[in-house]
Amino acid sequence: MSRYVVTGGAGFIGSAIVRALLRAGASEVAVIDNLLTGHELNLDEVRGSIEFHRADIRNYDEIAGILRGADVVFHEAAIPSVPRSIDEPVPSHEININGTFNVLLAAKAGGVGRVVYAASSSAYGDTEVLPKVEAMITRPKSPYALQKLVGEYYCNIFSGVYGLETVALRYFNVYGPRQDPSSPYSGVLSIFMKSVLERCSPTIFGDGEQSRDFTYVEDVAELNLKAARAKNVSGNLYNAGNGGRITLNQAWALVQRLSGVEIPAKYGPPRAGDVHDSQADTTRAVRDLGHAPKFSFEDGMRRTLEWYRRAAAA
Ligand code: UD1
Picture 1: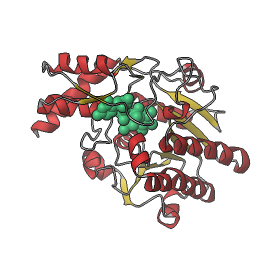
Picture 2: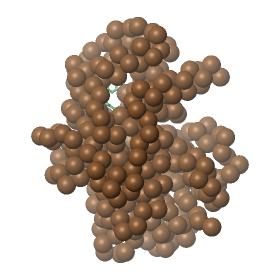
Picture 3: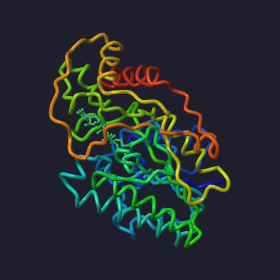
Picture 4: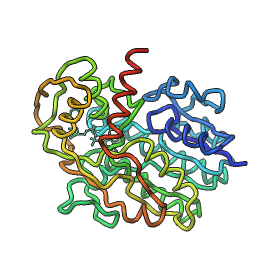
């Protein structure tokens, strides 16, 4: 029987991994979350099937015992925002770098089988060529991008130096049900969903022609499970994206069409630290991990909109 630990398991992506594990038959799933950006509500329907620990990855002693003996740790706990890392660099650094270091130390000390790490495509920065390939030189443009990159390097070092198995997945703009739209630091598509439900204009930073490889959360959760099982991948890093590229203007047009609500967006100045274009080359993840994203952007957005509508009506 395998034991799984999901740090940040009450978050948007972490809770999707928890549900995917349970669907795949896992019987022992523990969640670590300090509820800073996560919500217990995200675990409502699975609460009886998991262990929940309100604990903080900044505190080694709080987490070491929970990680001990786990077969796989999915490390999702983070402050996941580029602008927040610019406005509040200290907590962002402490959680994203020191917290990750603690998780790796505790995993090593506790004999954990593998750590699957939530890395970020923001590490690439603005590359001259698209799509972005893992072998490209990284050019982080924000504290957040650098912090996530440091975590990747630490995973690689713990694998090479201490023999701890690690796999890093560079997420490309994950979206879907349960993404919290309530903060100015929220993911743009969750903000678009909230805008149509409340019938108010979103603000697009810049001209809206920047693009992202938006990736549906269930595809990312499935890839995490695959990364947990794959053989001979320790120390590696993989793009976790779809391979497509959608501009914000296109995304806003789609949200309006799917919802039947027409409102012009407002436009504001471009955001500091913003990458202009993001698109994953998925060759390596397909080859080594069997990555097979199932959701087109339109399918994913339709499901996401349905979820926000139901949540608003509840
Ligand atoms: C996102 C993730 C980050 C992840 C990275 C790579 C979030 C909150 N951040 O960063 O964790 O590592 O992708 O996968 O999901 N924008 C607007 N209006 C808004 C909000 C945003 O125009 O109200 C724009 C931003 O300027 C940016 C784009 O939308 O150009 C995407 O922003 P955001 O959703 O915050 O994600 P990233 O910064 O790309």
